[in-house]
Length: 138
Picture 1 (cartoon, one colour):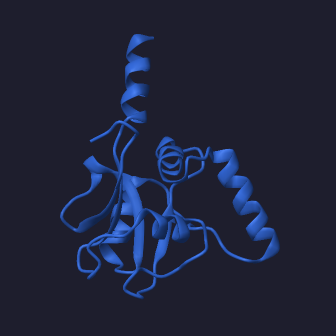
Picture 2: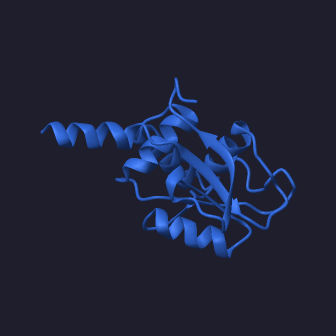
């Protein structure tokens, strides 16, 4: 039981980062721009290049943490938000992928794709353009 609690604490306190292809000219992106991209209001990077956001499965702890850190919302709120937008035809949600490894592979191979992963997953094929840390983090 104690081990499970410690694993849960570690997963919840992981630093999430937004990554882009290492070859793009954008060095960073603002939190507001990421919110607008991930909430369907914007589909371009600050440079004007297309931005295709990737999303993890709805039952993913990393997805829940990402949205909690980004917009301080729980997955039920995010799912409800997207259901309204999809029903009205105003926007489509970020493209879903299976796991963090798929995010890394997609971003490394497509300069228009952005995604979020735990900091420890990011490698030199991608660049970190935004850091999302729990409150009280570094």
